[in-house]
Image (cartoon, rainbow, N blue to C red; front, side, top):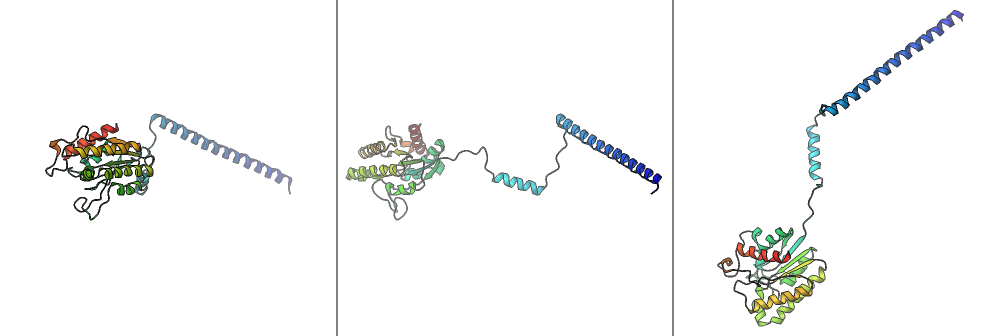
Length: 268
């Protein structure tokens, strides 16, 4: 090969490399400068509150977000209310109240922050069962026989109220009624050792007589024996004449409110 050609070729190669290096270096500097400028603009925009708005979210994405947010548990959700089971007769069931929310059990549950589970039935007794004339069914168990249904839900609180339907039985055989009251609370405590048990004594629209006081005393003793809270409705008598309905046996909203207030006063 001619020596001049070799020198010319080397010159060309050298010139091409230097031109490429110059071209690439300039391009790289321009890219770095543009990136630096973009970063500065972004910082200034954030600092001055002039950052551009994010692109709009599609309706489909927004709908999916709202759906998932609704299903997600709230961080500020309130703790679950403890369940309170109420066992008893027509007073517990709410007979005479203008609405379920006005019965004494609902008033107490609302004030105490409980979830009410009302199992009251008309005609329910400690000793005997009830029937069509009392609970409206062919057969309704006594309070002790109703207890397993309450126990099955493992409640934190059990409120037992009643005794007025046992007045006649108590006059005839006070020992049998007293024994049934004792076994009712004893069985509840054995099945629910950690539950708060509240024993509400009988009330009477007919005045406080011998059987009323006798059953109230039996409930108080049974409650004490199992470390339950006892509430008296006859010392003093919670029912006033103005609260009694025309049937002579039940109370109106004022009567239910008075019973609720007596129970809450004992629990405070």
